[in-house]
Image 1 (cartoon, chains in turn brown, blue):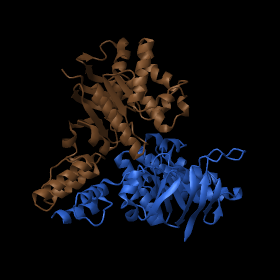
Image 2 (cartoon, one colour; image 1 turned 90 degrees about the vertical axis):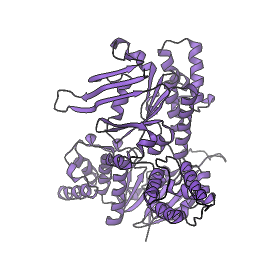
Image 3 (cartoon, chains in turn green, purple; image 1 turned 60 degrees about the vertical axis):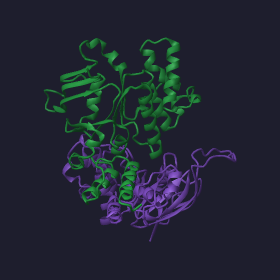
Length: 287
Length: 283
């Protein structure tokens, strides 16, 4: 049994009105416990609508979502419990900080879960550690933090609920290259240490290529591909037809292969490319 | 011909009455640069490096604490010139949603020229011209909120074009866009520079975007770290990495191959250059 499954999932905005718009159309997938999933797609392809259905913020117009084999809408009154198990970090989550102190903000979720005080404090400290937030910042007002620190505090607030599935919608948007790499590494470490499932929505093909096991490609409300990062990014032409692209390094290696140089397809990182090329040169006795 | 001149610019946000403490931190320190008319300039730096603060000095949104900024010879510290300077230098920001004000695309583009007190007939002309320049004319009667991110950002740029500026300053204009939106906006910027002769200053942390520029300025910790043509700047891979900056993957690949002993004399900046070079080396 898969951890999270969708069957014939449909979401229609303003159904029955002249503005009717299908945002997610007949989507099926299975996600296993412990996977790191990437979601890519052009603006308006349905990514955000899809992830908002996965944690019960939006109710599907048709089709079902099952978590551990149970339809999440089987008992609509208990949908709140689903939101504790499937944590969603929105785009630009720093705009949602509101408490007097960072610690209280991070504690908001666990408090609503009805945990006891000691457990809450534990979780706040641990969540802050996961996202690299220094402990002296916990007593500060969230509004005194820098942009990057606010972003981390907001993510910690969701991690503190210890969700089975953590969904992040564009967590690195607006961060500089190093800030992005650090945050991405922290999310990845969180995933490795806790073994939780992570779903990462991103416009950055490089980020998705670096950390994700499997990648979903949304296009005009449909789930067009759902495969390993390597297979997805070896379909460069189809991706560019959808307003997406492959990482620059993948595309460089692809055109070398096309020119007859025997390298392995689907290279996703610079280091892998360096390895591939130097091995080829060594085999040829030229290095 | 020189259009922007920055002379020994120092800036700090908290200009209190009292004399500043010795260790008072300046956001910008002793920055000097000149930008010629019609040039395409990229300013790169990591978050907090001060690059957006530089952008805001170029249309007198900020005034130097010390030093001078001249726009076509006009001192930005002279308040009587502020209006004129802002008409000559338009600023486009990161988030298109914060920049669109009207309910219909063409009304939004007309907002700037209306405020300049321009005749209605000329406004019409300018709006049409600006929308065609960014390739959004067909959308002139649509509602901005129904457009994609790249389309919105192009409308925001049209709003600036309609004011007929000599120079456009863009502060991370593609940060919130998907790859297609990014490409649309970059094509538009490049076209405005080449075909309409508009001076472009683009603040970005995408190095693949900076390689399109004529010259690149790298700002780190409020100081000018290095500057030059993209070739000159991006060949300094180690310096850039040490200062938390990325180089394009094409450049990094060849840099690392060279470190492994592969015979590469010149580092490429773009994907095409990299492929051509490696095909030669590996053939």
